[in-house]
Structures are given as structure tokens and as C-alpha cells.
Length: 248
Image (cartoon, rainbow, N blue to C red):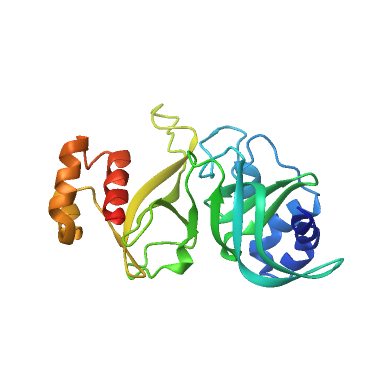
């Protein structure tokens, strides 16, 4: 925790050297002249909420969770000198998908760190997610994945990954017809990917694709699916299948 305190005290000074337009909101939060509200969506991105509401939020999970955070190692200047930042254990975090930011809850308030600085987040509570891993460590030849994090559903020689993207649906209400929606909606779309070496490829929950992918252990996988009465279109069952295959 001492390392966390040193880092977060020095963090506002460090982020000031980043792109000013991108960092302006982060800097104001870190310096303390802007306070987070219960629903901070309009504060971050400037929606006019005088005549409408914002439904949803930008977080992968809006609740704070204790985690072990692994950074891309770097030296960070703090008021007490230079520290080598590599890991922070047992810290409270949450992931803002839209801005690709990791928020840290500290005694001094909420501090925000760019997701590009972080390699992996391992949650102490496995029911939330075993871990999040930076998309920057994978090759995306489809160029459809923005910098952020994959949720690692199954680890091993073939990883099963879940990528969440945020889309904003603006109000489309037409007063003269009394039709449409008056509210801004924040929608989270989840897409599955698998790994082939360092490359990530989109995966659709189809039996043919699964058996082709696991062709070297096809009989064992089929036997496991029948014995456990698993359904490929069920994400929890699919995760079990990948975990089983990776254990062979």
C-alpha cells in the first residue's frame, strides 16, 4: 500500500505530460476540483440531462473490487523520488470501458490511470472475473478491437476471451408524433474471441466451429460434452468446454 500511496500522490503530475485534451477530465479529478456524483456519466462525457436521463453506465462492473494490478513496468516520478512501478496488490478498482481507464479507490479519493499503462488485473473474487488482460498484447488483424481489456474466460493453449464494447444510443424522441425514446442509453455489447498463437479471432458459438478448433481432441471433447450435458450456446458451458480442452 505504501507503493500505491507514493504512485497515486505523484500520478497527477505525471499525467499532466500526456495529451492535454484526453487527460483534462482525469487531471481535474485527480487534482480534486471535480467531484464524482452517484451517476458520473454526464460528468465524464457532457450529456445534457436537463430533459432526459442516462440509462446504463460505462463500467464493466460498477462495483469496486479488490484486485492485483500488473503494470507494464516503468519508472514513475513522485514527490518522494523515483519508484519502479510494476505491481500493486489488494487495491480497489473498477474498469471504465468507454475511456479505457482504471479507477482506483483510495483514502484520498478516486484516482484514474490510463488502461494503456496496465497489462493485467487479477481479481481476488473469482466470481467477478479470473482476470482482465490488455488487448495490446494480442494481434488483431480484423482491426475491430479498440485498446482495452479482454475478460479471460478460459486460459491455456487456446484462450476464450470476452470483449465488451460500449455504444451510446442518443434520444430519438419526436414530440410531434410522441414517438421514440427521450433517454440516452449506454449499451454494452459482448463479443467472444479465441486465440491462435498471439492473434485473436472472433468466435461464434457454433458446434461445427468448436469441433474444428479442437479437432486434435475431438473425441475427448465430444465425450465430455455428452457426459456433462453441456450446451455450446450457453457461455458458462462453453467456458467449461474450453477449460477441459486446455487441461488435456
